[in-house]
Image 1 (cartoon, rainbow, N blue to C red):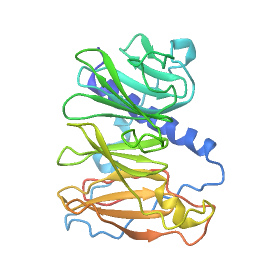
Image 2: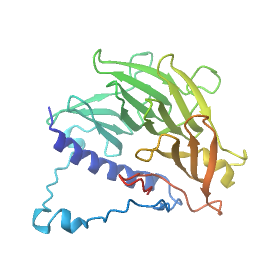
Image 3: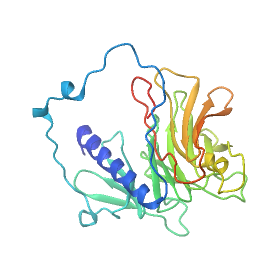
Length: 274
């Protein structure tokens, strides 16, 4: 098994790689780091140099490539599970790394127990230890206790199917609700009956308009201690979802139709949204 510190370092590396990859795939979209003006706690913030003296900043990198067993050089996301395994989403399957070797899981035609699609864009381990996998063609749930997948393919013709095209990110809120950001809006997953509810802020069907791009969800999160709202970043701008009524409102939006869009979001311990 791999240690937790090892997993954290590699998760950071692969998330960085994922960001670079998405930039290359989304040419013309400028990544913006926007800091919302939410008041900081009154306590003074320590500088990084004070927390980590320069003499302690020694980073050792080890590269994992196709020659190491990774199924692709294009990596979108990575997580560490409760057993210590590192799971890596690539454009050629889902890889599991035990610290020495890779095991790759791929979609197999006619096999309903294989992963739903090989283009794995996001990963999330929920508090019940299930691993959720977001792909280009739906989502899968991996049960680590049985070693099996359950698939929910994207099928716009099936009213009971997963309603989101291309899963970009996943988030489990303080209530245990599972949210999936897709290119078709925000999806709430009922994990008891595996039903799906889609929420949208799209104001037009014209893909060239900014109102359409609010459905291209790129980030989901909660501020620490805030149980009233979910914060959403999209290509259209920033949205806020009421956790009780599930109503969506726009917090901030881009004025231009092209050239700008959010591709990620981070909420720090003080509740600042980046």
